[in-house]
Image (cartoon, rainbow, N blue to C red; front, side):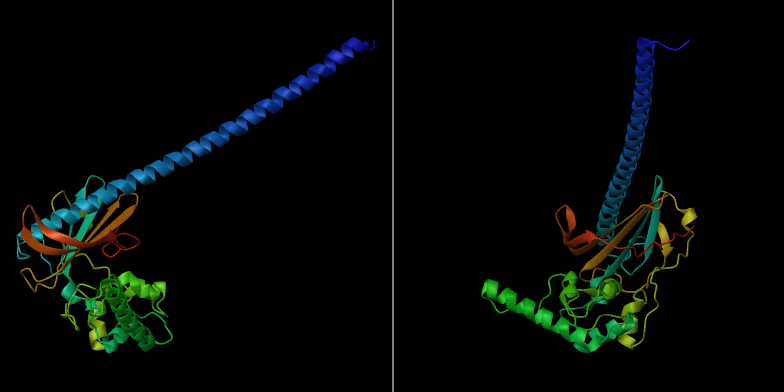
Length: 297
């Protein structure tokens, strides 16, 4: 028996309703999936921000601890020597490494002769067209900086580059070359030729006219697995130059068990006055110098 027109209409309307319900369920499922993915992404981003904030605070605290203790002990204590010794300890799931060195052991781009600057570029082992031309560009930059300062103040100034990042303005200075030489240069050294230090292989290579090793991450003399909550020596320094001698560089790096990383570099001048034993001349987030890229595990 055939359906009546009313029955056909009812059946057709029911099919359309079922299709609408199915499409609605599918749409809700898609939206729910998008919400879940967005929530997961937000959670990961929040976790990354939390980890980075925690590591940054640890690094800043490590700079404060190392700088205060080293300067109060005049860099001559059993801990916190200023000779390139690397110290380490753990704070919860994070590992902290700290090193203190002297700016006088670096090449001052405001005072170094062009020959030394050219040898530094060669020692870096980065392929560039003409190291001498880049060195000449650095000399021109510091003269330009002096003229700019004189025009602003009306007082004749000596050649002065304010911070090493200005070298990126020099023709021929690539990002790779700058990152390679950055640990070896300063604007706070105050001398034409730096003091030689075995903890600065790139500078030693520049002084000798050779090419430095490609990696300067120090090898641990104490296994990182043995670290506790108290600082211990991880890599011996040069063992020379005890006592406060000019401007210091403090490098503090932190890394957690998931591989998240943060580095802080502070350049400080000891003053031993008041409650704070030093004045910060320069402070920035640094690059990985004390932890290898793949970790020690």
